[in-house]
Amino acid sequence: MKIKDYLLACISEESGEIIQAVGKSHRFGLLDVNPNTGHTNWLELRKEIHDVIAVYEMLCDEFDRVETLDRELIKQKKERVTRFMNYSAENGRLTE
Image 1: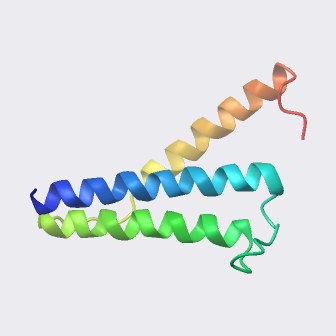
Image 2: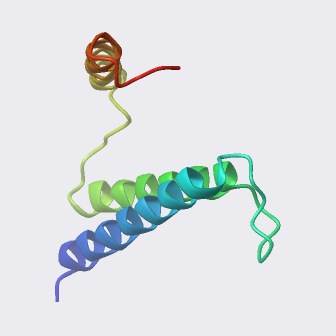
Image 3: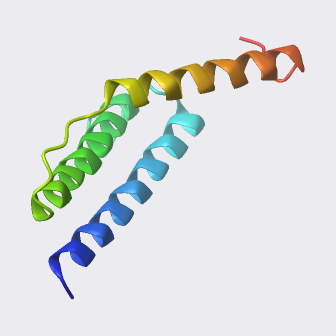
């Protein structure tokens, strides 16, 4: 296995851990404290997101790419999420 393949496998695993943290947040709430770790679900989610970013940066290093988080791409994603949140609210699905 090549390093890039190993790092891609790591990103896949870390993404799964994000999914698990989101699931626990849905079931118990973002501010609920996990009795096994003493951490809130928010803290666990934050950690897993940072783990993905760390492996992403390692993958960038492997390809000699100097990459930082693209604030414009982030802004565009926020706009799309907001647009679809509004659409969901208009359809009576989002009530908060």
